[in-house]
Length: 84
Ligand SMILES: [Ca+2]
Ligand SMILES: [Ca+2]
Image (cartoon, rainbow, N blue to C red; front, side, top):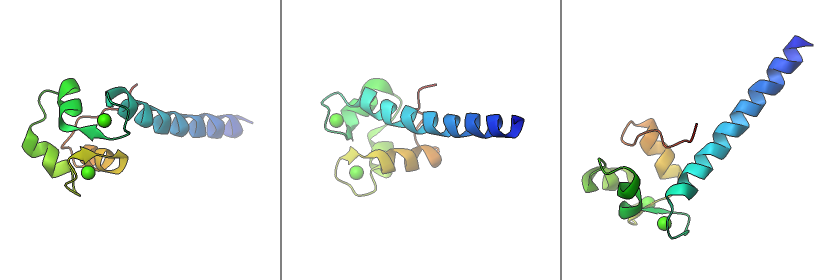
């Protein structure tokens, strides 16, 4: 019984983390296009330079999508933007 409860709580925590990630993007996404421009990122994180931004923007389209944002965080280029 305890094991079942622990498992359910664990799955719930994973789901919350995924939702928090999406909410973080949405929160920073001022114009609602689902991507983060350099100005949207810098509005929340002024420390992030244009150089860092283009390093994270691996396909060089001038905006960060979810995958680039997560990869940038995993590489330590971006701060953890998930809302906790
Ligand atoms: Ca945007
Ligand atoms: Ca991009």
